[in-house]
Amino acid sequence: MSETVIAPPVRQAPYNREAVARVIAERRHLDGPLMPVLHGVQDALGHVPSGAVGQIAQALNLSRAEVHGVITYYHHFRQEPARGPVLQVCRAESCRSVGGEALLAQARAHGSCTVEAVYCLGLCAQSPAVMLQGQPHACMTPAKLDELMAEAGDFR
Image 1 (cartoon, one colour):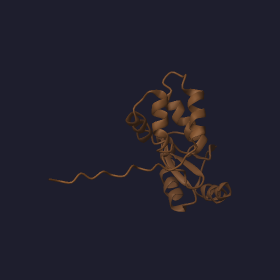
Image 2 (cartoon, helix red, strand yellow):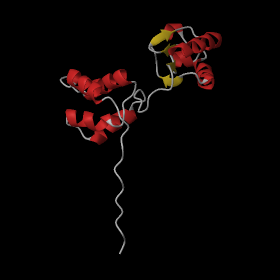
Image 3 (spheres, rainbow, N blue to C red):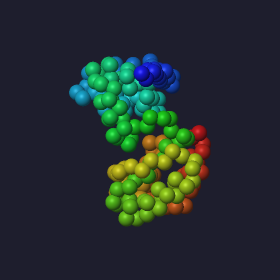
Image 4 (cartoon, rainbow, N blue to C red):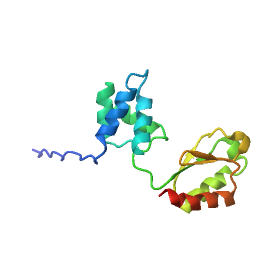
Protein backbone atom coordinates (compact mmCIF):
# COMPACT_ATOMS: atom_id res chain seq x y z
CA MET A 1 0.00 0.00 0.00
CA SER A 2 1.15 3.49 -0.74
CA GLU A 3 1.07 6.19 1.84
CA THR A 4 -1.14 9.23 1.16
CA VAL A 5 0.77 12.48 1.33
CA ILE A 6 -1.19 15.66 1.86
CA ALA A 7 0.49 18.80 0.62
CA PRO A 8 0.44 21.82 2.92
CA PRO A 9 -1.90 24.61 1.85
CA VAL A 10 -0.45 27.20 -0.49
CA ARG A 11 0.15 30.46 1.35
CA GLN A 12 -0.82 33.55 -0.58
CA ALA A 13 1.20 36.72 -0.25
CA PRO A 14 -0.69 39.44 1.65
CA TYR A 15 -2.45 42.04 -0.45
CA ASN A 16 -4.88 44.89 0.13
CA ARG A 17 -8.22 43.06 0.24
CA GLU A 18 -10.09 46.29 0.94
CA ALA A 19 -8.76 47.96 -2.21
CA VAL A 20 -9.83 44.95 -4.28
CA ALA A 21 -13.27 45.00 -2.61
CA ARG A 22 -13.65 48.71 -3.46
CA VAL A 23 -12.82 48.09 -7.12
CA ILE A 24 -15.24 45.18 -7.28
CA ALA A 25 -18.02 47.25 -5.68
CA GLU A 26 -17.42 50.08 -8.17
CA ARG A 27 -17.39 47.89 -11.28
CA ARG A 28 -19.36 44.68 -10.67
CA HIS A 29 -22.56 46.24 -12.08
CA LEU A 30 -20.98 46.75 -15.53
CA ASP A 31 -21.73 44.36 -18.39
CA GLY A 32 -18.87 41.87 -18.51
CA PRO A 33 -17.25 43.24 -15.35
CA LEU A 34 -14.15 41.03 -15.25
CA MET A 35 -11.90 43.16 -17.47
CA PRO A 36 -12.88 46.46 -15.80
CA VAL A 37 -12.32 44.88 -12.37
CA LEU A 38 -8.89 43.54 -13.36
CA HIS A 39 -7.88 46.91 -14.79
CA GLY A 40 -9.08 48.62 -11.62
CA VAL A 41 -7.18 46.24 -9.36
CA GLN A 42 -4.00 46.70 -11.36
CA ASP A 43 -4.46 50.48 -11.32
CA ALA A 44 -4.97 50.41 -7.54
CA LEU A 45 -2.25 47.92 -6.59
CA GLY A 46 0.14 48.00 -9.54
CA HIS A 47 -0.56 44.33 -10.29
CA VAL A 48 -3.23 41.67 -9.83
CA PRO A 49 -2.07 39.61 -6.82
CA SER A 50 -2.63 35.86 -7.01
CA GLY A 51 -4.49 36.07 -3.71
CA ALA A 52 -7.06 38.39 -5.25
CA VAL A 53 -8.08 35.83 -7.90
CA GLY A 54 -10.38 33.97 -5.51
CA GLN A 55 -11.89 37.18 -4.16
CA ILE A 56 -12.63 38.44 -7.67
CA ALA A 57 -13.96 35.07 -8.84
CA GLN A 58 -16.33 34.75 -5.90
CA ALA A 59 -17.62 38.31 -6.24
CA LEU A 60 -18.30 37.92 -9.98
CA ASN A 61 -19.61 34.35 -9.75
CA LEU A 62 -16.78 33.01 -11.91
CA SER A 63 -14.34 30.17 -11.40
CA ARG A 64 -10.80 30.89 -10.28
CA ALA A 65 -9.68 29.30 -13.56
CA GLU A 66 -11.69 31.82 -15.60
CA VAL A 67 -10.16 34.78 -13.76
CA HIS A 68 -6.66 33.33 -13.88
CA GLY A 69 -7.08 32.55 -17.59
CA VAL A 70 -7.90 36.17 -18.41
CA ILE A 71 -5.01 37.48 -16.31
CA THR A 72 -2.50 35.19 -18.00
CA TYR A 73 -3.92 35.65 -21.51
CA TYR A 74 -3.58 39.43 -21.58
CA HIS A 75 0.00 40.64 -21.32
CA HIS A 76 -1.16 43.93 -19.84
CA PHE A 77 -1.89 42.32 -16.47
CA ARG A 78 1.04 41.82 -14.12
CA GLN A 79 0.91 39.17 -11.40
CA GLU A 80 3.89 40.65 -9.57
CA PRO A 81 4.60 44.31 -8.78
CA ALA A 82 6.64 46.14 -11.40
CA ARG A 83 10.31 46.66 -10.61
CA GLY A 84 10.63 50.42 -10.81
CA PRO A 85 8.90 52.65 -13.34
CA VAL A 86 7.02 51.00 -16.22
CA LEU A 87 8.25 51.79 -19.72
CA GLN A 88 6.09 50.54 -22.58
CA VAL A 89 7.72 50.36 -26.01
CA CYS A 90 5.49 50.22 -29.09
CA ARG A 91 6.00 47.23 -31.40
CA ALA A 92 3.38 48.07 -34.04
CA GLU A 93 4.46 48.24 -37.68
CA SER A 94 4.87 52.00 -37.79
CA CYS A 95 7.22 52.07 -34.81
CA ARG A 96 9.09 48.94 -35.88
CA SER A 97 9.79 50.43 -39.30
CA VAL A 98 11.64 53.40 -37.79
CA GLY A 99 13.70 51.75 -35.06
CA GLY A 100 11.24 50.61 -32.41
CA GLU A 101 12.86 47.19 -32.03
CA ALA A 102 16.26 48.75 -31.37
CA LEU A 103 14.66 51.00 -28.74
CA LEU A 104 13.11 47.95 -27.09
CA ALA A 105 16.49 46.21 -26.93
CA GLN A 106 18.12 49.39 -25.61
CA ALA A 107 15.48 49.78 -22.90
CA ARG A 108 15.81 46.16 -21.79
CA ALA A 109 19.60 46.49 -21.59
CA HIS A 110 19.35 49.65 -19.49
CA GLY A 111 17.62 47.88 -16.61
CA SER A 112 16.26 50.90 -14.74
CA CYS A 113 12.60 50.19 -15.60
CA THR A 114 10.13 47.40 -16.04
CA VAL A 115 10.04 47.22 -19.84
CA GLU A 116 6.90 46.02 -21.59
CA ALA A 117 6.56 45.52 -25.32
CA VAL A 118 3.08 46.69 -26.35
CA TYR A 119 1.18 46.74 -29.61
CA CYS A 120 0.38 50.29 -30.68
CA LEU A 121 0.37 53.33 -28.45
CA GLY A 122 -1.64 55.28 -31.03
CA LEU A 123 1.17 57.65 -31.97
CA CYS A 124 1.87 56.20 -35.42
CA ALA A 125 2.38 59.59 -37.08
CA GLN A 126 5.14 60.31 -34.55
CA SER A 127 6.88 56.93 -34.46
CA PRO A 128 8.68 55.44 -32.70
CA ALA A 129 6.84 55.91 -29.43
CA VAL A 130 7.17 54.83 -25.81
CA MET A 131 5.11 55.43 -22.69
CA LEU A 132 6.71 55.97 -19.29
CA GLN A 133 4.43 55.74 -16.25
CA GLY A 134 1.40 56.44 -18.46
CA GLN A 135 2.98 59.49 -20.14
CA PRO A 136 3.49 59.10 -23.92
CA HIS A 137 6.74 60.14 -25.60
CA ALA A 138 6.86 60.33 -29.40
CA CYS A 139 9.58 60.72 -32.05
CA MET A 140 11.86 58.71 -29.76
CA THR A 141 15.54 58.37 -30.61
CA PRO A 142 18.22 56.33 -28.84
CA ALA A 143 19.59 59.53 -27.26
CA LYS A 144 16.13 60.65 -26.10
CA LEU A 145 15.49 57.19 -24.67
CA ASP A 146 18.77 57.29 -22.72
CA GLU A 147 17.75 60.67 -21.29
CA LEU A 148 14.23 59.47 -20.47
CA MET A 149 15.50 56.33 -18.75
CA ALA A 150 18.02 58.34 -16.73
CA GLU A 151 15.12 60.51 -15.54
CA ALA A 152 13.08 57.37 -14.81
CA GLY A 153 15.22 56.80 -11.74
CA ASP A 154 13.36 59.75 -10.18
CA PHE A 155 10.14 57.69 -10.20
CA ARG A 156 11.59 55.04 -7.89
